[in-house]
Amino acid sequence: METENENKTKAKNEHNSIIEVKSLIKKFKNKLVLDKINLNIEKGKTTVVIGPSGCGKTVLLKHLIVLLRPSSGEVYFNNDRIDDLKEKELDKIRTHYGFLFQGGALFDSLSVRDNIIFPIDQHYKITDWKQIDELVKSKLAMVGLDGYQNYYPAKLSGGQRKRVALARAIALNPDIILYDEPTTGLDPIRSDIINEIILKLQRELQITSIVVTHDMKSAYKVADRIVMLHNGKIVADGDADYIRNHPHPVVQQFINGQVDEDDLALLRMKGTMSQAQFLPSDFVQ
Image (cartoon, rainbow, N blue to C red):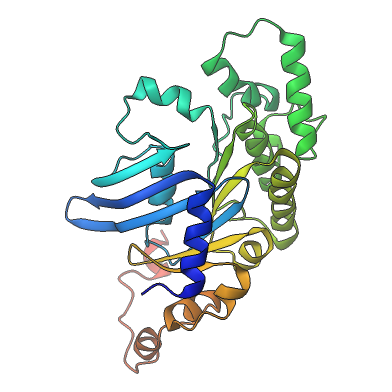
């Protein structure tokens, strides 16, 4: 049952939504991953999606850009249904989106400059290369990496690769950026740099951001709204304070990083450990 807080959030988001998901169900064979998801994403705000591994966060994210299609249900962008469009029709829609993949997904054989140019080259015929170089410079400046144009991904740190990937994600001046675990694999300082860039892009470019993360410190810092998924359903929806004080034990268990009591009991059971199949001496010649 939705609380009064969640009903108010839902009504507000419906009024100014840029993305809307209606009764979204996704199955992979017989496995139900998303179970009748209804979600409105408010324009110009940052919505963070949290939840345990395997709950359907990344699957949901991919539906928003129709990298996956629903088993049933509908997805809308600016009030137009998009989940039933053909791939050629989706090409134009996707120019409104930027996507930061979990690993960055840079092309190792391309320089930083050419990585950022890549999405532009895919959608448009480039004629003014001076203008393109100025665009690359401005996008790198947004993420604090102007001057790295001629570097290759192998020469960059993990945090720098994420920032280059983010510069590429904003190359087409998108309305929306989808972030899949943007701080995974980064130390706390580099993670906070990514958080600051997310806030900067929203503040300066009025970009709508949707962030999938396990990182609660990051979630609390960047979110206007936090949505929690559990077993394919939305179990909590509100601002950071609302989520911190949510009464549901599943929410509290996740945000505080607590092991389930049943799992804890299993881990603490006494018993003998099975012998290793091989010993180190078995490999000595």
